[in-house]
Amino acid sequence: QVQLVESGGGLVQPGNSLRLSCAASGSIFNFNLYTMGWYRQAPGKQRELVARITAGGSTNYTDSVKGRFTISRNNAKNTVSLQMNSLKPEDTAVYYCNAHTIFSDFWGKGTLVTVSS
Image (cartoon, rainbow, N blue to C red; front, side):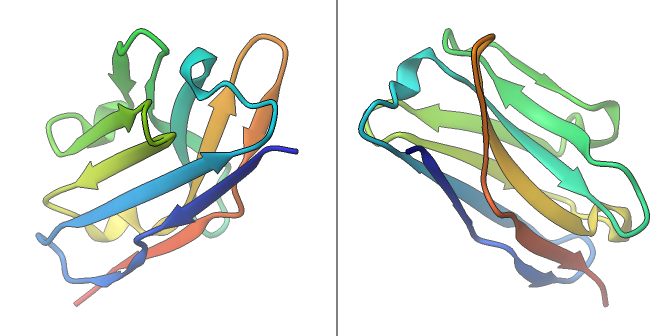
């Protein structure tokens, strides 16, 4: 069984920063092989990709967060992080961690980020 556990969400004022972390575990889970991603879902909207990082370290971001968010991974600790700077109210959403290969997809339960003054 694979588990992805997100942490770091909360309430933050516009312009401030948050760092999300996702810890992956599982007896047959080889973290190094997975593309790791952060998705978000705002109220009344579909879940969207925010950022992802491949096993080789290549990254891509949705346009709305480019230059503000940075995704990183630590293969030794089986973790992936999302550094979010200059947060905006429209970043408010539940953020989900995802682990993906062509054979499987795993999801965390999500962490709520609220950007509000």
